[in-house]
Amino acid sequence: MPPHRSRRRIPEATVARLPVYLQILVDQAEAGVANISSEGLAELAGVNAAKVRKDLSYLGSYGTRGVGYEVDYLVYQIRRELGLDHDWPVVIVGAGNLGQALAGYGGFTERGFPVAGIVDIDDDKVDTVVGGARVRPLDELPQIVAARNVSIGVIATPPVAAQDAADLLVKAGVTSILNFAPVVLSVPVGITIRKVDLAVELQILSYHEQRRASAQGGQLHAVPNEPGRGVTA
Amino acid sequence: MPPHRSRRRIPEATVARLPVYLQILVDQAEAGVANISSEGLAELAGVNAAKVRKDLSYLGSYGTRGVGYEVDYLVYQIRRELGLDHDWPVVIVGAGNLGQALAGYGGFTERGFPVAGIVDIDDDKVDTVVGGARVRPLDELPQIVAARNVSIGVIATPPVAAQDAADLLVKAGVTSILNFAPVVLSVPVGITIRKVDLAVELQILSYHEQRRASAQGGQLHAVPNEPGRGVTA
DNA sequence: CAGTGTGAAGTACTTCACAGCT
DNA sequence: AGCTGTGAAGTACTTCACACTG
Image 1 (cartoon, rainbow over the protein chains, first blue to last red):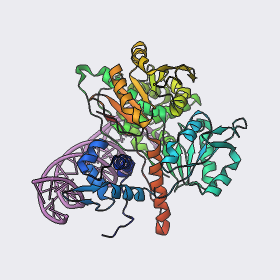
Image 2 (image 1 turned 120 degrees about the vertical axis):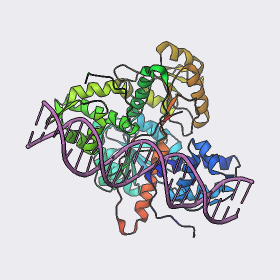
Image 3 (image 1 turned 90 degrees about the vertical axis):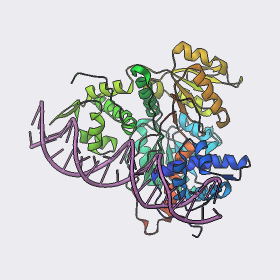
Image 4 (image 1 turned 180 degrees about the horizontal axis):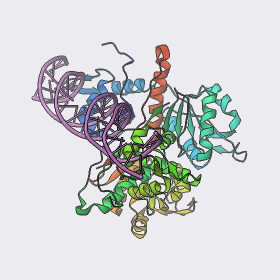
């Protein structure tokens, strides 16, 4: 089998786990580990070894029977499959609390997602500097997207402004959106959306706490590991 | 059927959607809408009507055939099922960029998760005030948890400190953790963990962008709506 | 007769278990 | 002998379709 950029579709559940494996493999490589078995990787990722093997099998046959996987090569293949062989500049809409924290969070740039710009509708926020980026007015969004060839937008606005932000991002040419506002966005077919709602996460924890509290006999229930949610409209 | 706090297990996928329905229903109630059909709610939530009906059926038979659901009553029932009939104070570990943004984000308190405290190991951060909360030293964590009866902890530390933070939270008596650090935590059985990894979200988007770019013929693929990931160790 | 509640069918993902390679 | 890669079995979730009810 030639080294191929695999064209078979990879299950979403697997796509959501590949970044986790990648992170672990990079750490292992830094620690000087050259090879790893599906069982070793599974242990570190907190999943079942069969799942690791099946997940990796979607990339191709990159393991060696009797031995395991070469860490560096796996890193390379996962990166390629995820499209991480080049940077993806992102534009952030909304320079409030969260927008500022995101812009200032070094982890983005470090992991291949440099902040191409951050915009806000509020003139008072424009020209303030957050995390090395100067906040630009909202109407410069199209220029930023065009100039830096941005295809990923991040919405960090208040809920009421989120749909407008989405519309503007799409109009500017962005094709993927990460939405932190607690609203359901509607976008044209072909635009990929992911939503991160912090309150929803806490509410799910609350559900489990509440069950725990009312579980007479106190027998504990296992909640399975589960991947991400995504939408391509 | 008596108004019951349902004891049947609700599928995780449903639990992850209930907060979304809840948000929409609260908005609708505020807009003066008294009744809503599964189809109407589905539309607003961006899901299939059958899914809405099945999800709601896990709570009990709270609809009226031929009419739909009474908004206020549904809000009440979902709140109860999610354990949102009282507040859940949370403690935040790590007062960096993200920790500060979370503490300052009014949405938490507003949605039933007041910040009982924020702690940091760094003395330079201690006593600074973020979002109305004064940062306390890490070793006060147990007192905060005990005093405010906190059962949910939020980890907003750098990756290397996250496992320590988790251990301390568990030792202090926290039983649910929302982890923003990009590491896999290991915790005792019975502790519920949810992880939010911003870089992972972007990498998933990157995958779809990358596929989009290399899709000869450009036929578009629909990525299904998918709920959250959770772990109870 | 509109719209819920739900068995049954369909789909997606997980796990098992083992053949096959090194 | 050990560990991958994968059909097949198992489980979880989604969607259909329709009986039933207000």
